Length: 342
Ligand SMILES: Cc1ncc(C[n+]2csc(CCOP(=O)(O)OP(=O)(O)O)c2C)c(N)n1
Image (cartoon, rainbow, N blue to C red; front, side, top):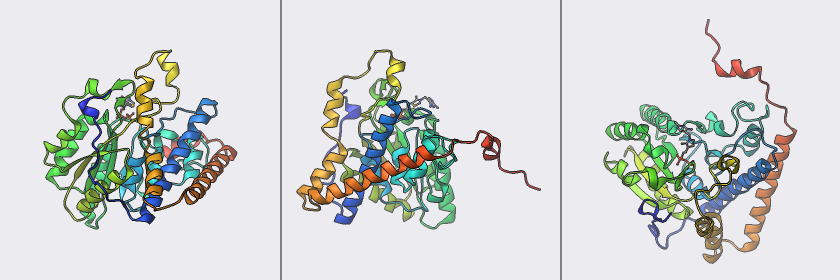
């Protein structure tokens, strides 16, 4: 699928890298997402999970590189592929895992599941099963932030499929006109479900933002340094009252659309192994690990210690989820509606 739509820009920031502390935190953030997603992949295949999971393997640099610039006061909206955004924004791994396992200890008491992980106290406005819905939610959050005038920003993560929804054009219009502190982050991973983005996308996605006079950056979404630097400029601009920015991160969805897709496809396929392998060679986690070593930022022993700590954290989260209490269906009504006043 080597099309112009999905060519990967490289070298926007040659030579420069983040300070060592930041570089290590980016590594840890990506690694946590990767190990969580691998565990979910395996537990899904073993039939242990109660519902579908859409995994973020291969895209970790985008969530990690962007969220490194955010605090709990900033907002982020996510997608159906939302575990990475939740974790990178500081969501609790135990509470997320318990949610995915449909346990009462989950971040939404087990009533939301994988596609609804959210933690309002950390500005995580939620994963979302409605493609494109996060665009409007983020625009609303950015409008609120502008009214508060205290430097908060909103980030909207969305896919190439969502980029073809009307909500993108509607929110670009008002975000530009009202100079909202909104950072659009389009993760162009090449597919919407089983359809190549190029088959259903006219023009270039980034041009949609250019048409509304919103500053655009096209980055290598598998290069966490590139994402981190570009997102930093966009977040700083938004905080300073400079309005919205649009980042298109070219990346690749290494896993299927969701973990049970083999059943849906019934033996059919929509992409070839060589393409997947080609992108595995550009693995964002391995690339950053190599950079950390080559640049002298960390040695292999230090990185192995981070790896061990991350693995222990994931094992602990799964044990916590497994031992939790099943979600209580009786809570559905009380959790769904706010209590009547008076
Ligand atoms: C409004 C809406 N239309 C269709 C769907 C079905 N659907 C779920 S995921 C998906 C593809 C989304 O593609 P993209 O935005 O590129 O995200 P990705 O899965 O690649 O991360 C579609 C069409 C949906 N959930 N919501």
